[in-house]
Amino acid sequence: MHRKILMIYPEFPTTYWSFKHSLAFVNKKSSIIPLGLITVASLLPEDWESKLVDMNVEPLRREDVEDADMVFLSAMIVQRRSFDEVVRLCNECGTPVVAGGPFPTALHGEISGVDHFVLNEAETTLPGFIRDYEAGNAKHLYESQERPDITKTPAPRFDLVDFSKYQNAAIQNSRGCPYNCEFCDIIELFGRNPRFKDPDQFVREMDLAYRNGARGSIFIVDDNFIGNKRKVKELLRKIIEWQREHAYPFALFTEASVDLAADDELLALMVEAGFDMVFVGIETPDAAALAECSKGQNLRSGLFESVEKIQRAGIEVTAGFIVGFDSDGDDIFDRQIDFIQRAGIPMAMVGLLSAITGTQLYRRLEKEGRLKADNNWQGSNTNDLQLTFVPRMPEARLVEGYKKIIATIYSPRRYFERCRVFIDRLPAASVRTDPPLTMTDIRAFFLSLVKQTFSRYGLSYLRFLARVALRNPSAFALAVRFAIKGYHLFIMTRDILKADEYSTYLGRVQGFVRESIARLGAISESVHALEVEKIEKRLALLVKTLGRKYRRLNGEMRIFYAAQFREAQAFFSGSISSLKKNSPY
Image (cartoon, rainbow, N blue to C red):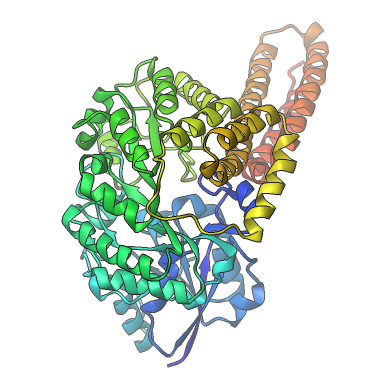
């Protein structure tokens, strides 16, 4: 039976990873296509009509929801605010909601308004839902721990995507990771035995994306691209063949473990296939912390030497770092900064350790009674300065240390230093040549000149570009791209620190009110009224300053803190009114 399915991808908040502030330079709306949803679309019956609305590139219209027979909704935890708004709209319109993906799979018990949860891997749970739905008796929950054979998964519905709106295409080659990192939810979702697509299948998907308009970069979204080195070498040879036949239309990037550096053949094949960036989970330079979180693969060789080897092969290393391990000492913040700078890692994503539901870390901390019952974690460990558990280090010290790291590494001078270090390590010759400059590239360069030359860091910016132009002119386009990414990273860091300053100040004002109320209970009748008047005046000034700090937050941060701000205003007003009304004098 014909059905009209509306596939909705909720909006991402602005984070370090979103690169929202940089996308405008290259006239793009979003960093990456919603691969999960268009893969689900490929699994639907042929007579079901699918339409995609990615809220990161276009607004969701009420009439689209009303016109659909069902809404399919997928999200990560960081998208939960937008997810909830979409569910409310669907409920208002009377359109059934089918939800899946990482957020519903991990926390479906906390989600209301969804008619049907189709969790885990869609290849195993979606067929049962479709069968029951067509029979008129669809259940509320479908879940399975079965690991599907992804060689049988159809190609994603790339025809649903307008690639011109995205910075990067995306294709999946494998699911799962052979390692056992305590904090990681990937092995819980997809297992420790990596499952691979057939190399010809993967290349057909590359070709399909190409024929549907994809150009530029492709993110291979594997949890660990090199989880089976023999299989990935076979794939790389196929990719090289395809890239040569099509004059290298794609630059590739992916995620991999740091032991990539230990296999010279693998590294050379990745370079020849067109890889120019790899994300590596370094986490920490501290051996005790790596052992604590079961990240033994990072202990087998020198981390600094491994990063440098990958860079000298011609691949940029982007890396994740974490603070908050039980074994972290007070020196960990300076050690993280020192490693990131020396290693020349331009995009170092540093986050607070988070206990994600279902992970080994979550289970251990739950057993130890260290999980926070009232945490309101929003799914981002880089710009949400809330901890999901009680750390060994005093929490205030940990958060201050984290802020020190991001304030230091994303100061423009330090950032451009790392970019320079990486560019200096690049080999003189590359297997592939960069594509010719387009009008978009030229526009991005001139926008960068206008916006960044006259910024507070204009001198550092110009020195960086001038140095590259004089010493390594072939890398000048890369230097411009780094500068544009820096534009986003600098703004994000400023906004995170401003938001934390606001939150800290709010706590101080609330503390002042509580202390004042407690103090009033112990003073005499003769001075009570005067004291209330003094508190009122002091509080009025504090609230005025608080409002000013709130208005200085960027739009998304104001939305994030809006409910808290309204509650605080009501609390302050109610506290004074209560004092006047209930005074015993």
